[in-house]
Image (cartoon, rainbow, N blue to C red):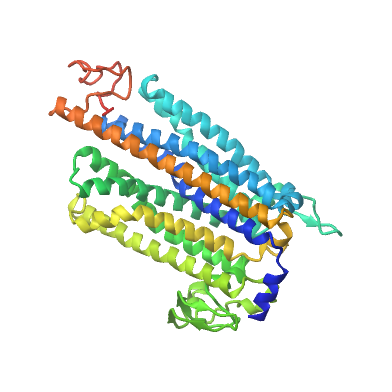
Length: 493
């Protein structure tokens, strides 16, 4: 306890507001990331399905999801720009000393951002103006641009976890930078693919959850069935893949960042036959209270044998490791992430078994209740994954090379707290506006659906995603090819 108090006393006064501001903006931004990274792919899957099957409902879903994608991208521009400024304003020690080594990741992300903006604009513009096949082909680079952006950010973050590609001179400054080694660090591969699949899983459950709510409210037409089935299938397929990747990245942390692994698993002393604790709280004297203790399991999970030696927190001085409180936070975040992932895997298994045995969707309302909350649960899991990664690395901002306290700005703490309050106000307004726009779009689409249903009870899909909009579609317009394309008419406004 005395060591913790001593370390806190040595920390600059501006460290707490700087970390709080960065944590808030990152936690807010990451809510939008799954839709930014994975929604383009899910939209194009639905789009391709609609083109191949001539399915007007699928084309309508793709067009509407592309509108959501554009709104999300616009909000992401705001939150992402704030983060870019914060790296320079809050952590000048990091960027000033290490920017030449790992800054290329931010450069790649910036280029990907501009490319994605252009591609989204073309994709949105093309719905009523381009031939169907040309429009779809022009949208295909969108997922690649989103993945390229993730590549840049994860390259920078994985370098901070396992810094490589440089040599320190006599003054402790990095020289002889080798870019490829700085990008492809030991943590990059596991961290990148774990992140990408997490985005696919989360976006799939978030989108499907919206239509699960509609299903529970009695909207069980083909439009809602497709809106649920396609994104949920994507998420269900990738959920077990994520378990394998999660195990891989945890094992890589065990080898490359043993002290972070000790924090994630609240291991105090280096030993073999180490038990696994589900939750529980680590105290400064090394004791653990609460939680469920499973003998030897941590050693088995780390090295497939109870004889595996797991490095403890006391293997390094107190100034080189997370505090007991930080370790407990990382541990709880890790356990919550794994717990949510396990529940989502059971939900995916339920879905898969019903489909394989009966070739239909589950009929139980409880399945759709669980599906309705799966999106929120997935976002919580993503947040917990970020907390595990960042808090578990403490006190290092560059693992074993620079502490967070060394990188922080010299700006007065009072000014930082004022800035924090202003950012909170702005973000509340931004996210409230985002929600208001989405609700407005939903209401407009629902009114259009009801109007189409009243006017054309047998064929409510009266509008087409390609060609000009018409107030009263003729019989030719509702006939395959009637809009000048090879597609049937489709769309609900």
